[in-house]
Amino acid sequence: MNKLKNTYIYMLLACVTTGLFPACSDFLNSDTPSIITDGFYDTKTGQEKLLVDLYFRCRSIFNTGEVQYFGTDLYMAIGESETEKMFNGYDKTFNSTAPIVRGYWENLYKLVQEANVLINRCTEETAGSDYASINAQGRFLRVVGYYYLVETFGPVPFYTEENTGIISTTTRTAENTIYSFMIDELEEIKGILNINTNEPGRITNAAVLHFLGKLYLTRGYRNYAEANDFTKAAQILDELISDGTYSLLNNYADVYDEENQNNAEVIWAIQYGLDKNYRGSGNPQQSIFGFNITALEPDLFIYDQNDYSAMNRYYWIIPQVHELFSDPEIDTRYDATFKRQFYVNNTASDQYGELGIYFPRWNDNSGMTDGAINYYPYKDGDTYVWYPQSTSLSILNNGSDRMPIIRKFQDTKIEWGAGGSREDVILRLSDAYLLAAEAWLNAGNTTTALERINTLRKRAARSDAEYEQSMKLTAIDIDVIMDERARELLGEHDRWFDLKRSQTLIPRAYRYNPFVAEYDNLNEKHLVRPIPQDEINKVSGLNQNDGY
View 1 (cartoon, rainbow, N blue to C red):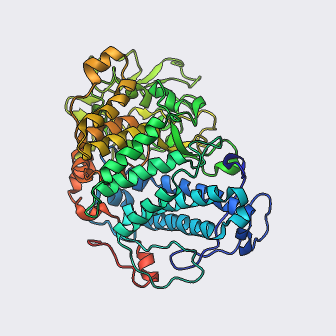
View 2 (spheres, rainbow, N blue to C red):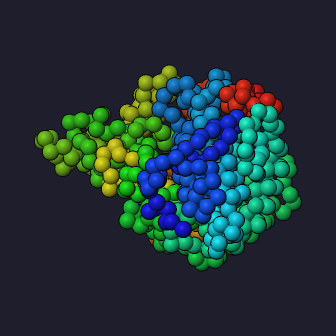
View 3 (tube, one colour):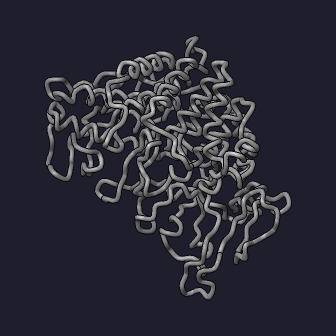
């Protein structure tokens, strides 16, 4: 099977139907730029390339930040565009014509349909000894598609066979049916794939265990839960943790070392790389959590990817999130996560090489500026300094438009403004610890839940003594776990889905997100997003979610 990072494909689309699935009739790759017939997917070569395309499709799913980040307790929009009002603030204009939901819906169903094509066409006769692996990967990725569909939209049209005709009529299948299917699928493929792989980006049995545990955990909160869902989730996640193939790195910062990608803690990461044909538009993580330093301070700073990434000024970390690091000097995750010092790199400046911008740790009230040219403390009296400006909210009118940037995803190997080349980590072992803690908590075993959380906190502490004195937890509840997820996984995916799963989205978004509090419109209906109106118009039987 071709290695994911060495397969050069400009575009590969499955031949799917109209209706829910937009039609296409040709395929283009760098080796064979000619029209390929539908029969191509009856061959092993076609099936391998279709599998590669499934992995490619995951990029767009996890790059839809409006769905992943907006409207949560950790991130907020920097303005009040139509999209920002709807997804970040849940204002009263939130409706089914939002382009974000249409694109997300289409990408997820393309993933599902292409997986159905692969699963249908791939046989032992065509794939030989690789059949079990190709089939299992296809089924896993189909589950990924359905998970985000059902969590985003609630009951959705449900297809497990390749569609060969135009879909003009459909029905929405209940969530419990889809959840039973997803769990059964992963239970059936559990153990088929190797626990790890020498091909970064490839699904492994570790990914199957991780996602299966997450499915049991999520269902455990629902009114259609089965009695032992939380216990099963905890046991499966503990199986992954205790296996020993994957391990927590000794230092938190090492997990994000640019020279240490696909390390022993990473279970599944979407690959990009430096080859422009493979990278596409690139991984955006390195550019989305900060401010445009060269535009705001042009006399001091010039483009230099080695010093700081080209920030798009799109997703802002809500300043109160810094306070979740109760002692940022002892918790090493704080300085590993945030870049707070920026040295003048404009050689034309008389102050070249000096400390140009300094953000102290949030709880540093000493007033010590470290001799910086520009000094921005966390607060000025009761006013937050680390906020954007130019919005209608009075709380945001006095900010500096500057804040510590997330440094975890820094990508020094690309040109300024180019698409990111680093891996996009989707599943890693510390997340399994956090999910296991949540599962054990809900199963009534607070002792084990604390052990899972404290393992991460001990790794994060500056010293063992300071862990025992300051960071070791003795009590736990769901808010403690959500706080810990914020510290451990800041900037990573699924925050909206984590809050929805744990039934904390509404209270935590109100507590932290100023737009949510200002608009005061977030309610139970927002636990699902609206079905795209274009789909409702095209397909009979596709009714809208309540309240939209």
